[in-house]
Image (cartoon, rainbow, N blue to C red):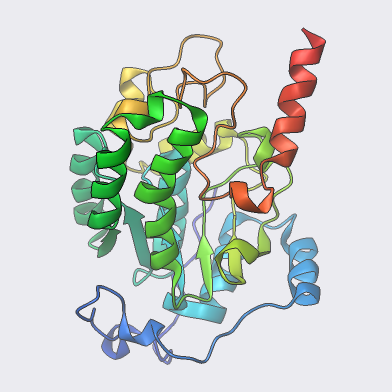
Length: 293
């Protein structure tokens, strides 16, 4: 794998000397402009076809050329997110990176965020759940409501992760995700470039959509990309501490997420919202799998 050369961005309006600083709300002033650059359905479809066979770097470079810091990288610092961050940083070190602290993450994740910040010398914007929403949820349903039912787990995910992501995406024209098609049934049909109707119509960019897990780890080893320490302890998918366990030999890589649930989607709702029917494909696959047993 050859790294792309750094792009010459000296004349860009969003180069370092022209970037606005964070305002009191934590968002960038430059992201609050009413002028939005959204894709329409035809353009998104054409781009999806055009870039489907292209490298992740080519997709990232195109998106950054079009939107600059109005296209943000969302990462939970798992393997795919780190590959995406590393690729984007090689193209433009001034990338806009953000994450969500649900309040229930592993200590190793908090330590790793600081390590990544120092390694790339970048700002990482951290979004938090609404305090009042958390207080009301815990007061009504308890600290560990997610163990009670799938519905309660979705409620917790929505308050702690989905709603903060909605705030993080306000003002953006596009966002990068580390989704891959072979991760889970609900992700099998994702395109590298598509319209995110669940978040206002901005572009959702998944440069690693056609990559395998092996390709992700090959990149990490080849370019010495920082690796989350929990992988060394047997985790294959990393989320909130109470909702993630080490996977067993032979298990699916996402088997450690919400492991106590039976025939429930391995999603939090961030990429596959329940209210829009996004789980339909996954649920059909689960039913078919059970019927074959």
